Image (cartoon, rainbow, N blue to C red; front, side, top):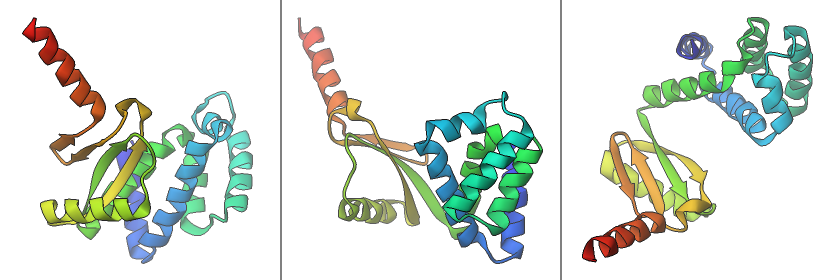
Length: 176
């Protein structure tokens, strides 16, 4: 379902030559949902009626300055009672935009937020490996202790301290 909505939205955005503006608006909305437990609950909960969701959504869109095609799309999704899947729709839309631009997305897990210059260096290194522009999807997971885990397509490089410590622990158990 998310793919169908994303494909239809992508086609509309391409016709209107508004892919980048739409992506920016949807990214902003997705970040708002990710940052707010209340908004996430509103989006995901079937307890709220379509009318209640639409009223709350209109207030959020107004405050966030999201309008045009993105606002109309979010209202349509709400009216069709599909708001619970909006984050998957946005992710599918991002994938279509990346594919259209010849980009690939690398999932990067780090122990703490990385600086912009490090992200740029990582992006450049991954571009030299893949031969394509690379968009980074950075997740912070303190459980990896240090280092990073990079997934690019079917390839994965795990340089986290947690993995190294587990390898040492396993080697010590075998040595006994």
